[in-house]
Image (tube, rainbow, N blue to C red):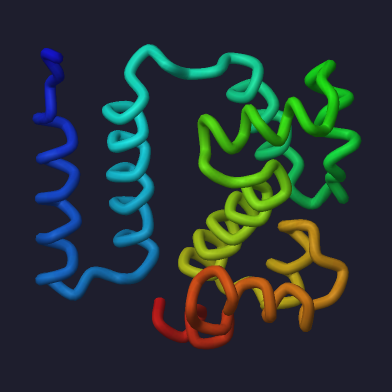
Length: 152
């Protein structure tokens, strides 16, 4: 397989330099997003499910919406089980786990780049309770949002 790994190499180099220079968490998060996107492109060349890509674009545009598995499968025109299988194949997680990761990723970006309160960030990513958001954030990211917010 003939693959150009130069963009990935450059992104990893940028991340490494940022860590060594003590860059703020928001900048490091952006480097990580870039590395992740490039890795996904390398791991699944030409193997992208366009219907899933479109679904995740819709979800990303409105992460505060109370998405359900039923609504997602209806939008795709698939059964919930078919959608689950597709997500497992292409992402390695269930549709709702994928949404949780998308929400936590957006929350981390918001916490790292702004002066928004944790309650405001929670609401922006679909949690009506800051406590539920904090619990989910800590479970996925390893630290509570308050600590993440202070690290920026």
